Image (cartoon, rainbow, N blue to C red; front, side, top):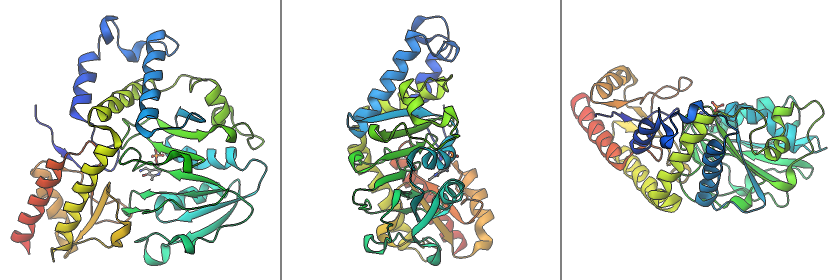
Length: 360
Ligand code: PMP
């Protein structure tokens, strides 16, 4: 079987071993004579799969006992609304740190419900850095502070966790969850769309401190109420059972790789290689401030943008897929999530070198 090198930002590459296991189990799950997809979400078999996935995620991230882990739908984008609906808790104001397209989108949605205060924005430098702690202009009366630790489009990563005092810190970890260890206890809420480091699209994981549940804005839909979701073990309605099952397989795979600490070492090495190559080349460039470079999403430009199309055509022909930058910014982007091997990065660097030699 041949598998291409897939640098898609999401839905992203999944570990081959996970897909092979899913293939083996697809028509007959554990000798039951039916697929996990065809079982009731209330069956003891699926409830077991769901609970194991939650436990494995808790183990991987060392989630403290006073946090709920929710498996929700609607992607990370629905969280942009659920967060103000659930976390304003009688307050009006919310602080947002804006470091790219995704945190900006979160602001747009929050404005429908909250008095949004921009605590800092790096739009002035085209989202090529994150603000320093002392540049955060936090409001004394904000119900929470929202930020995006890893901006998927700009390839910008926070190199610190903002200190927000006794305020509730909320993080959109969609593109960097499980890429290296995080201290969950620093956050009131973490959310992540699944389709990068967790599993296929259709699922959004929310990790929320228990004391924040149960005080929603009037008019909040039942399905958007974290407490309803938590009280029903994320099965108030029919959950996306197959995505949940696959996420569970990915968690088991990640445990077998040594967990987030071990994969974090590999991820940092993969990213360092690629940035080193780019920095030492006069053909490619990355605009992000060094300490704020993402280890998951590496955008880069070619010296001559007229070569972009040729680069994409030739890379695709070489089995290196999905290297086009986000449609809003152009250029190139290599997303090198957990399931993208170090070998894939080596092959990419080799291709880039060869391309530069031929076209430089
Ligand atoms: N936040 C970030 C950081 C993302 O990268 C994305 C998707 N790429 C989203 C939010 C939106 O996720 P979804 O498509 O699951 O709504």
